[in-house]
Image 1 (cartoon, rainbow, N blue to C red):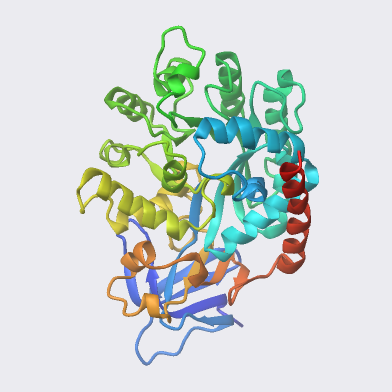
Image 2: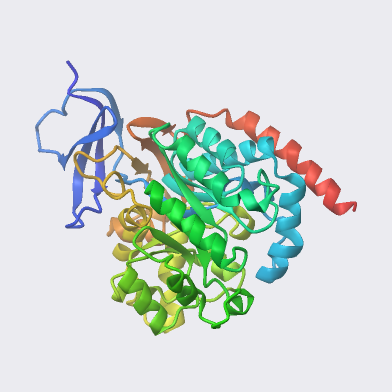
Length: 443
């Protein structure tokens, strides 16, 4: 009888457990959907029996990365409208493109494309917020990636919700439909922002999320001018506005949170709200630099996210870690800020905590779900290797990933996705996007 379904061996195991344990010649056993063994290999002792064995070839075995903010279907708009201010980018390009081109089939292929990109680059869990989220969920389930999926809420007609009066009820219905339906999917509610949702909508959406016991997501304090766009007679900051409405608590995920002063941080600390830090997107749209070191000092839970491909323009969490570590060092002129260990934790365990899944994933510990990544370090840019965590944050990239497991399922094997016909998918995406290019270049 086999002792394990899969045994991964001959690698450096970076556990991201409470002790930040690193096991130089480690091995990891998977039984069913759980991690059943994380240990050092004993010299001259045969490997345990296993149905499948994977030789990490001296590479790094780490927890699957957790992307705390995505818009999965928006991979269809990668590079469509670059080098523009956020308001122009959003109102003059992205919103019109969505109104014209987002429908169930485009959402399906865009979601598949993003999920394949995420998996190939070592992300095993993502947190999404978009429209037509039923179609997003179906495509996510097809790929096998783990996801928190939020049905979008805005106060104007949106894909799948032409009547804004139904925005919250549609989101609540999505949560009911997908609760317990698929073991890799956790439903959520996503209010786009405090300037696209009025106070009544925000309160109703948060109440629906609280009643269902699910995560409430919202873009907040992303730009310097956001406060002036919010309907609030007090003129409060975006974070204060949300707090005064009773939105902030430990089940609220604030995305971006770039413009926060000391009082805002104190409010977040009191309410135990979580943050999704999106440094690449924030830099590309010149939104600003979020006070992440101050958030961490205040004890807030901060995860990393890529945002959607329309504003990043990729979903590589290794790149996001590198940017997060370096951005804050140069901004504060302090090279010791945001050390590699802290940034890796943001991309794994703290990211899982921010979206409510840290008891299940985010670290390599026995009993947790087997969301595991193997990085191949046999390449020039990863040689030599003195510190594996430093390598993961500052040197590795998504293309170095060779194997990915989600809940024990081998979703990436030797650099290829096992659940999706990638060639056919790329053909379908290119055919669809040729139409976008033609229509936008010939108005």
